[in-house]
Image 1: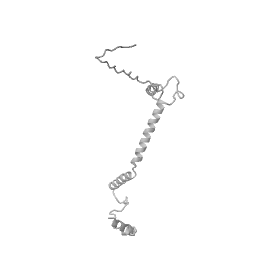
Image 2: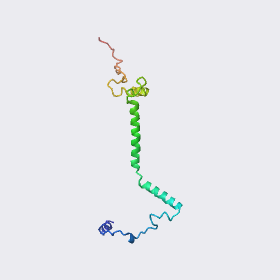
Image 3: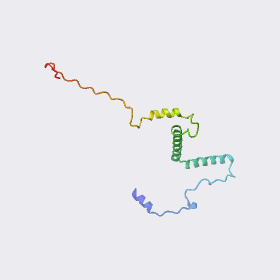
Image 4: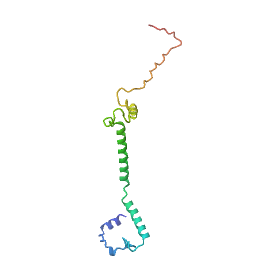
Length: 141
């Protein structure tokens, strides 16, 4: 297997010539559109468009662009609702999104502060003292 690969690599490359090509094309390309009928023109155009679309399709790039668009829209919406100072731009008596802001910061307000409200742990119960039934117990105070 490796000997044939080495032999092929050592052979000189034959220059490509369209007139001596053993694999001749069956059709002339591009076809002369003035000589073919409208139906065949439409078929060729549709085939060309489909092949061009497949060749230039970039699924990773398309996915990246969609994710970037969605994340920027979500970021701007969250920023506008939770953090943007609407009072400087509008009526100070009417605060938009105040209900949502108070609810959100009520949930997350004490999350990262030192004065967290913690659940009290249950007091430790002292184990009962061992009492022997044979010896009388005297309590000395």
